[in-house]
Image (tube, rainbow, N blue to C red; front, side):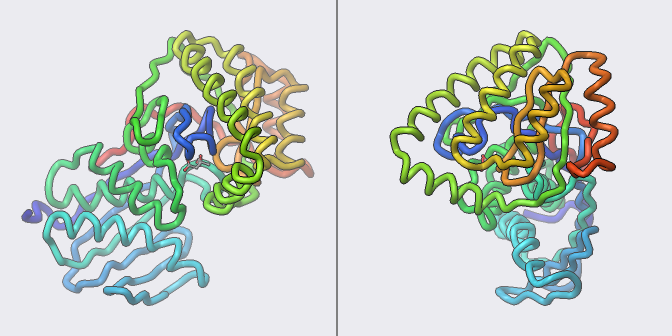
Length: 331
Ligand code: MEV
């Protein structure tokens, strides 16, 4: 396929897992929402056969065949940038093109805290590179982005790349696909970033060990998770946020059982509940990361708590978020 332009831009949103994280890896449903924080990627065709990647996190490196030249950033830079190089290579090979690229990433999504930053990077990079050739197809983008994301997190369910590509709210089942969810109301969700980074791959592996050593309990927990996600689907449809909050609390208990919550997350969840939240839970892989909170309108006490977080010894930061309905955008 011929290049139709020599540079392109794309952006993709981060996400929240509202229900069913971890269980989704084992073909159980999850509910996700895209959020209005994005990763922006610009690509330029260059005159070498190198894939040069620069991220605003200060990571800079150049890939040529199987070699990597670290230009700035810590030792792990290669591991962090490799999936983005893979996205570019997957597209270039599919389109029969062997040109080099300069890829620049700018993000307003905190990374490694459960907000889907790796997936959004893969989706935006795939879309930007593919749009050098034609108008990209969203299904194709999400499929390729998942392939690349599996370089860092090999058992990825693919949920994060799907929600980042398509946006909105979605009921997702690995190997089956997704259904969009339409809500009667804009959900009012609070988000707390604990500031503690995690490795999704390690947490998914720890849940795998839990599953293998607790076969019966894992089956029971999986069944509960499925029921909770199904009820949440209905509650979102109906705009019933109170029920949604109560389902979040039930989901959080399951995540505690499989060992991905911890004392600090539970403390934050409990404080939110005592200050009037309808529900609160960790979101994403856990082990630090972020917490989502469902709350009634005009929750003054909670608002004060959110505002005071970064100065308190609990740590954390409240991040205002809304659901993003656009998904990946190509400019
Ligand atoms: C991470 O955002 C969600 C997990 O369920 C992993 C996955 O779905 O691949 C923990």
